[in-house]
Image 1 (cartoon, rainbow, N blue to C red):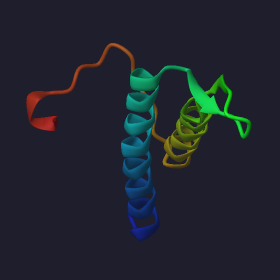
Image 2 (tube, rainbow, N blue to C red):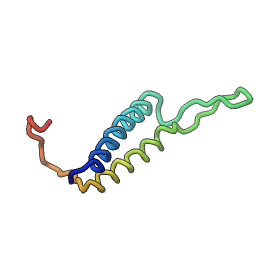
Image 3 (cartoon, one colour):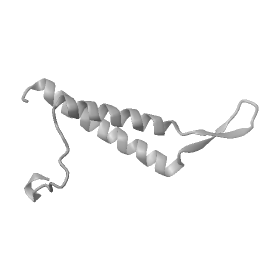
Length: 83
């Protein structure tokens, strides 16, 4: 597969990769629930929205891989010059 459309999809995938890493970092730092201050001054714990966004981001990344017809091969290690 060669062409600007495919390159755009790869670029999108790499942007999503960065987003996924940032979301995972936020979840690791703040946890799956976060403190939220209510209008009346009370606090309560609510779900960290990064969890849902990470799931959506991963799903989109998988769709891009599928569109590019790329598959993960288990048990195959990359050569040093491929990294």
